[in-house]
Length: 90
Image (cartoon, rainbow, N blue to C red; front, side, top):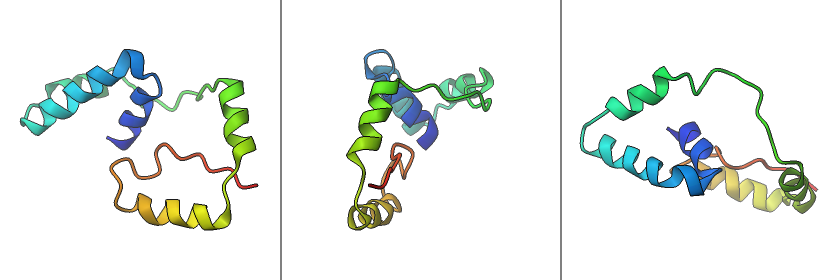
């Protein structure tokens, strides 16, 4: 679920409403939408594509050792874990 959420909120204009509906259906005990997604093969180990400018900005911003430790500690109890954190140290 963490990976699926990170994949969908990367393009919130198109997929955020769908993701919220997915969570709602799962919360109501309905898993047919989730099964449908998994059957489509969203997790097939294809190469990840990045927009170069966004990736370069993330790398340039860096993260301090202190902040990285905090991110790692908080990820243990966060909804998405480290699924959205691509930490690049300075």
